Length: 318
Image (tube, rainbow, N blue to C red; front, side, top):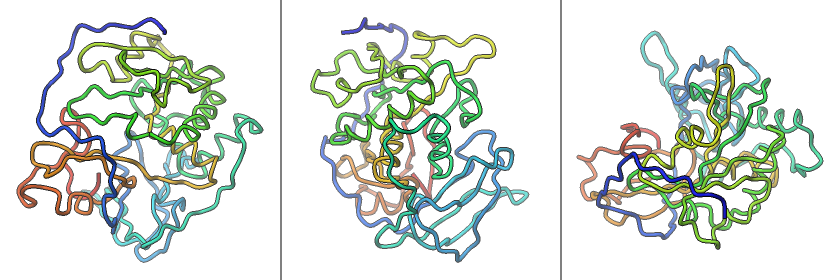
């Protein structure tokens, strides 16, 4: 076992409503939305109009400053609304979802046969590239640069956070493919960070092309920024990339299945949830669809997307 990095500073906040480790269907998802405001320093250029029909993986908008970076539909359906704010700032593109998702085919590939440029082009064309974030600044990574390291945290220390062993159970193949892709982007093994008490049977302990590090201590031990500070601090002019562990599986599915499959497992929890559980969902799924019939008082609750410390109060998407 690797050396355990022990953190003493921080605080674990105990909240009621921890989720039972059972994964259920969330119910019918009627709409999804993609929000440019979720991405720092992004100036979007719209590529669709209301009424257009799209497949999962079709381009909705691009980055005006970096047009090679595309943002694609997480679901197939019809563009239902394009919502704007002050000075016509693009806030979200809403898609009325089909009953059955139709996917744009990007082709299956063996990662071992692809070079770095081919992997980057596939990630850009499919709209998966924006899941890779650059530190400092937490902006979308620049595909023209090479980071000194890539970090993936496989645990979340925030209150009521999900257990990623439950979330990614059965996704070992996609995770491994995703890590194989990331290694080719960085030319080094990926830093995979786990909680110190992670069991040997975890889905993460047998992954290849990763350097596993263990952390113990209170929140924010699970934050990538804290982990970077302890393992590979940034110097002037340097950058590292950070990828969410569920997004590693999405990268793997892109190459294993040849499609942008934006399915995720979320946890709906808290003291005002009737039965806190894990649910199958989609990137950008409607909050109303996910919470329907699951809250103690459906009309007077504050719903936070993300964790309770840094999440966003949202009405439309999760």
